[in-house]
Image 1 (spheres, rainbow, N blue to C red):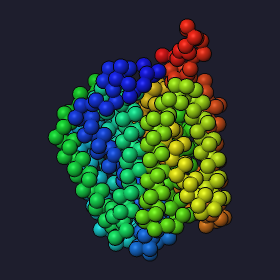
Image 2 (cartoon, rainbow, N blue to C red):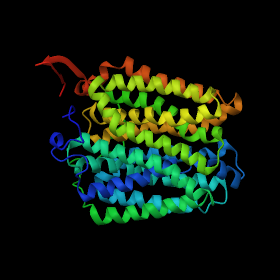
Image 3 (spheres, rainbow, N blue to C red):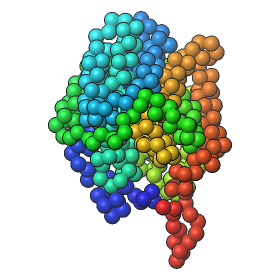
Length: 412
């Protein structure tokens, strides 16, 4: 039931924190997987200096990673429906371990970009399958499972920059080796605690995620998320160059950013959704993110630091709402819907890190944030214009203003 609190044992029958070992093992490995996204944030300037590369060249670390991730989304369902969720998770983790370790040995930015592409393939296999495994195995229903997944995302996003700063202060290579070691531990935990998941009755084809996007609601969510992800990854990949801080200071900034992301995705977003409805929360959060990006782009250095941290709150809310919409707005199987949605949105995550430094080279340091703000507004416009196509999910979280005995009730 959407109106229930996933943290309330009475509401879910189990509560968010009472989960099988397999779920905790998968969620723990997910934390490390998401750490790998923000890991390089504090050390981007150090990598550029160590490999004698420009900011736009170093930003290709994100571009290659997410470009491969986007295309890999068409493969994840195809693979997992044939070899099973457990083997897919283990294969993804193994690839991350290998390519994260190789990243630390890179002698040129080209090598590092290539190894990050392999890392992206492994991460795609793992992350997309992990969500399906957690939703399928978690106690308390899909709402609790999604929040658990978002908790892993938020914690990973918060700890990634911190780990990158702590290890990267000595050498930019150490964070990559550290991630490889942590993912190896995650691989062992998955192997020990997760039993093989039942295979779907029907095998997923390579084109199923694309066909799923033929549903107007899912296509609308994906289109809006595309614009949102451009704004999101402008913050993540371009801001470190603008702040130009030591790894420790940059790591602290992005730790605060990730902490707000985690709190707002897990604690704040569900409550606001029950109070105002998913689409209102999403539209407002996107507009506020746009305003924050403008402040970040035109404010002083201190203001930019504060705006960077604050952006984590809006990004956290958006992540939760987008995930729920993508999984519930169409009648496609959740793994297929998730793959189609991620296939579209990760292209923006690949584009932003490459385009933002280029836009700065062509204009000035302010314009990349203006473009990102416009992208966030475009995401809100899609939500508003395509509201009818999104009402399937919206009705489940839309407040009902009728009252029974003086108490407001919510749509179920």
